[in-house]
Image 1 (cartoon, helix red, strand yellow):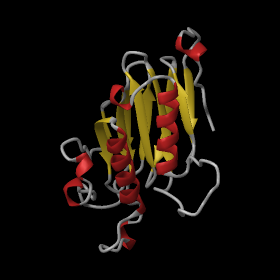
Image 2 (cartoon, rainbow, N blue to C red):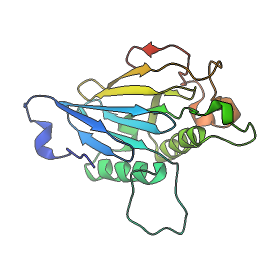
Image 3 (cartoon, helix red, strand yellow):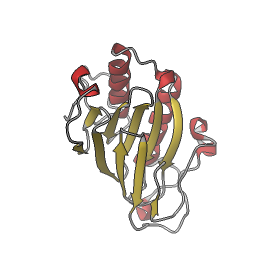
Length: 201
């Protein structure tokens, strides 16, 4: 799992790092770091400290695993990796309230097979992030979630911006995720239009 967190990296003036996250990966970085990934039903969460120019991003596949599991933390599960990143920031003395977070992904990649009475994995992934982040006291600054398309995102820790490029839509609906119908934590901050690309958010 990529990890570039260190005190040395805060003042390191070397050339910018480019990291790519596969599903289940997470990474920490300083102002010389850009982190990139590609999402479908998976969700990525970016964390950014605007004063220290330090941040992190995770790419998880599922909201959680069976409660009886006592295995070590696994970045494939949203609840576990968000908890881990929160603890790492707190060890560095960064309170959640000082960090800005953004949520991406959670698409329905099989819209034709969807059961309207059952939440998709994408929606469950969105909701676990929104709920835990709110409970921990993070500022959810923005969210680009839902719909039926892939997303490529690039997180620049130098300025906290995240660039989003959306692939072709697999459904006709403008937005398949409605926060007012199940995720009040995202009300007022959701961005899930049908555009193919967007500027940084």
